Amino acid sequence: MRLFHFTSAYHLRGIGQHGLTVGDVPTDIEAVKGRIGVWLTSSATPEGHGLTGSRVDKTQFRLSVEIPENGSLYKWTAWASRNVTRRTMQALEAADGSKADEFFVYFGWLPPDAIKEVVEIQSGLVVPRWKSLLPQSVSLPGVSFKDRHRWQKRMLKGVRRQMQVMAAT
Image (tube, rainbow, N blue to C red; front, top):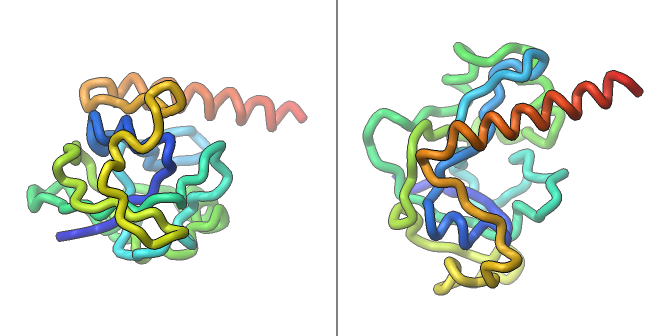
């Protein structure tokens, strides 16, 4: 099955090195709990996928990803109905997640060779040398599959800190 993943230019080098390894899949937004998974979509356009609000433009590039048939891919709405709190679902939909019915989550590693094509959204052109589009000095580091739990721990710590700041104001 072929699905899409959207990302920024700053993430391409790391993805080219490690593949798609991480993504925050919140399960209980109030308790700051979640799982590590890669977000994918059946939509060829980035609108309605909750990609706004980041420090980088995660709508710049569309990766076409060949998904292995190994039982690690879940239709978001079906998986979330059993694993995600109602409040979390409402928060995700309010944060530009209007196309939730097109979302999938992959709980595993999608190596670089699973990425079959990268398209720059604004021009619609295929980017043949996407792994080295930006120099390493300005690219964000990728996350290896073995380091994904350390990444999630740092990310959740940052979310908790931000929630405390917001509660104090």
